[in-house]
Length: 485
Image 1: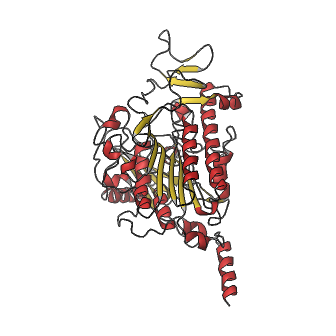
Image 2: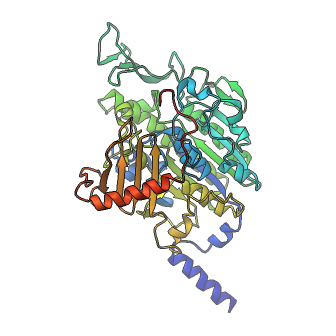
Image 3: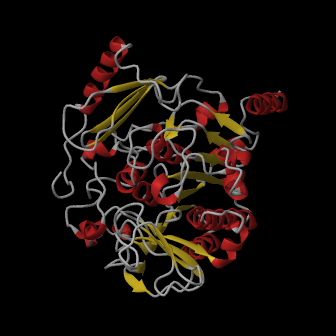
């Protein structure tokens, strides 16, 4: 009788997309790996339709697991999006709406509030070994340091960006934004050896990313000689190798493909056929990132950890198309925008022998779900009672839960705002000032948000406006904002 029951359970799990090994896997503490790309557009991976730049390793996560076609983040730029990801809560619940850049990173009030418990805190407190490798951007002063936020190890930088190779830019092609070209000209200037490009198309200089922003190992600055994507991969694989005998959480937050645009020589050659140097440098950066993801996945496999490692891949926000050429097609908008191109991102997940391969999941999910999925998989029940903005995605992938993970999703950044309710999208996208008109789109029939229905569907617009106002009532005003906002 017992063997018949076991066969029946195994058959049921197979039908619902969860293998017969899932019961054992779910009884262990799985390793949690988050691979976070920076500024990677929705349309830039091969599995999302890019045929120009090959991304086989990133694509393999979708092939071996699930690709979320309606995967969102909680903000259209870096810091606030990471705050939501790290806490599992809308960052507007604790007033973290904005994006510290440059010297603002060292403002003592600019950072993830210390009252918020991070995913690293939560996993560490049940026995996980934890590491952040890469970009932090959740506070640049001592009280916000990653090792005070649940991470045992930290290798990376604290601010919003970093050069992949510092001046004199050896072994890379570099493209930098400038206010003016040599001779006070406008347009694009290319050096005689074609390894340095200046461009005025954005109307401002390249930010001073490296100013007071060293690479740290734990709390000490270090001199790093490798191209930064490769250095982060080196540190990540070392962490996996050293901790393969215990449950670990690895947050590998690449700064690729964020500016500055710097493509390593060995990748530039692969994309020589791309005529536009702007695009070819971006392609080299993305190709490098993809190979780095492949090295991390290979390291997991080498240590025989595939069946006990839950891997997420996503971008922190949509691609800044004018800045990087990063494509968000077929979506409208880019980084910083409340249109889909700012907040809908490449989003994938795998867990060998728990999630069946090659799932394309079309219902809306959000980065908040990573916190809940990871802590549920780790059998953590004592999570703060208000950390409920995310859901556990595994029952929706197995077929145990058949409804929507989220009927409603919420966004707010200053006067910019958005709400997705079912297939309807309400948004207000102006840069500054109150009193901006709401726009309304039917995403089921208009994913590119071309046809504003706010006037013709006024009843629906007003319904969603009431929902947004009600949800906003559960948020708080920003506790920090850039000067002048």
